[in-house]
Length: 87
Image 1 (cartoon, rainbow, N blue to C red):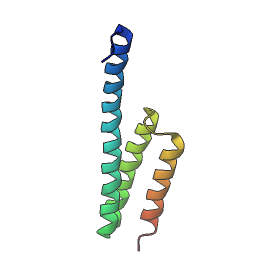
Image 2 (cartoon, helix red, strand yellow):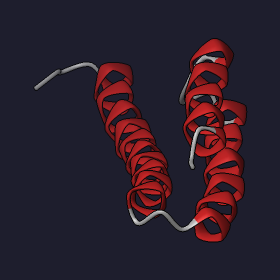
Image 3 (cartoon, rainbow, N blue to C red):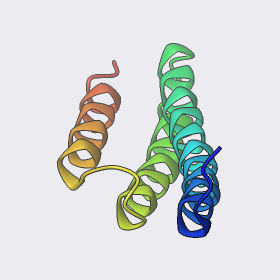
């Protein structure tokens, strides 16, 4: 453990931010899984609803700085492609 007060604070702040980022990333992964679950179930309406929700969650993660904007764009693009390719 650090002895300097500012270093102790940095450790605490970094831990707090890491926990926040982990929670946000977990929410994104859950939203993505819901889209793919709807696709596997062959339910187009549920897939579109899940896609809208996932897109919102992913965009919020980008706005908070958890993901780079290109990463979010790639994730949304892949989800859109998967939903559009449903039979």
